[in-house]
Length: 267
Image (cartoon, rainbow, N blue to C red; front, side):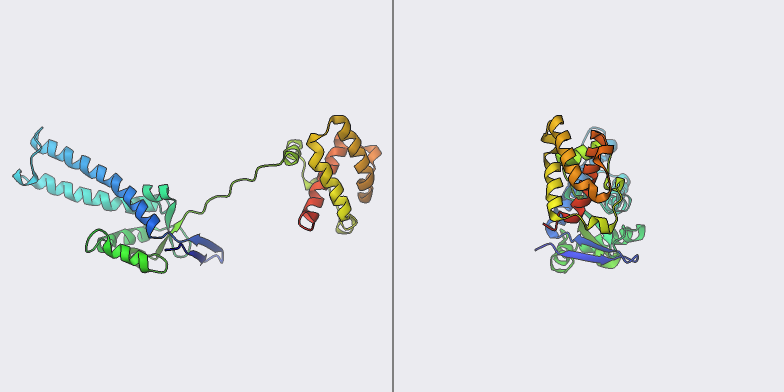
């Protein structure tokens, strides 16, 4: 079943888009969680058996005193239920399995799951597991348009995929040079009327200069900076003669940033 996109309007009138987690991803997360819990369950039972009968591991029905076993069963039930309840609340809607798969539980309004929602959602697992092996829950998730089981419906929650952070764009050589110089487009104030005096030909000129900047020798850089500066800087009322090479280069690179915003997507 395809994963649907869900758009949520928060009470603060912010629109959030999520990808609803389907049966496959939810089942994978549950299997991971259940494997972890099974390990805990087995270890706990082994410890209890060793305590009750020394080093002899006998079947449960042989013991006359079944109180320790009864206590163990209750404790294991609390651990198995409390695992989902506590982790989903304290880890922002994630169990270990959900975190590994990349899904989480949130409220239908886009906020993080609350203590009450987590309690209700996981209490309803008792019904979702009926008649066996989460049959009811699987059927609900598969056929519900938002892939909800009964616990989600009652608690007002939904399981979604984590939104992946976009990787930072790798800087180009000229962008690295600009960052290393500590300059930005705000270093040069140009009014709108002056900005309109620059043409597409001017943009191509300074764009070519910026593209070749890091490839030029120092002598070539100084020569091109003077030539291009005499053409472009007069349009913003600046004189090339009053600047040294470093100042001239910085001014042209700032001008490049400003014209880039204006012309990059116009060409």
